Length: 372
Image (cartoon, one colour):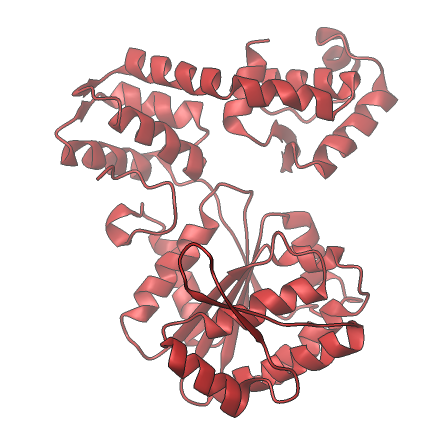
């Protein structure tokens, strides 16, 4: 088995470090403190949550529930994700049906269907209008309260900032009102938009004001990542030079997904010895494989924005994007065009801002742009 896992969480043996973060999350849960977890995408926050849940699962004294609302667009979508996650846990299908009939939704029943590929039962909730949605939400929380009387419950909602984009105006207030009623439930609000998440929890005018503690996920330190990488290659009797590992971590900016992906490709290359030249070759192959997709990005944005994207990639992190030197060096239009371009690329999630510097979000795409 390739030890550099790209999908889901495969267990602590395939999980690198995050010891301090894991302890902090478990401490917050043990003391029933809600927590907001932020990081840019592909940094490993979802893996961290599942790692923590794995640790908690060993005790069998806490129920853990995770669901991702990134692709939801309204309160109805949230309800379907939330309700389905409560019925998708470890119970058998008959037990779920019994729960649903006895104590779940008293006035609005979930619709049961079966996945065409796996045959597994799935549940959906029909919310015809906003009033129905609010009532369904309240009943779901009522069921959750009953369930939490049996044992503590921890709920992780990934990409939580998405609720700010729902067309309904009262979703934050609705959720805050219902979560406040729960006595034995802890929430982890996770997301990749640090600015929006911060606003949701620090703005005194918003319902979730000062209701959680904050934790931001950074890159895994090189001195902790390097021995992990070397050990995993050794499990397959593959030797890798220290300089090659340094190169991997530099090329990927130590962003978890990209480290895993590059190492996965190297491990699966069939080579028994990995040096810096091997890393460069495999990395080049990855960029070439994705070239057809990267080229299409050009059609999604304007020419000035495309040129700005190339400039940001070549700078590998820059704060002074409106200076005459930056504009002249990269043959950009003018200050106002750059300002508009930065905002547009931020809105499209093609770049992100860390501290004062701007970076292209996709590490591999950034390296491909550097070559143009």
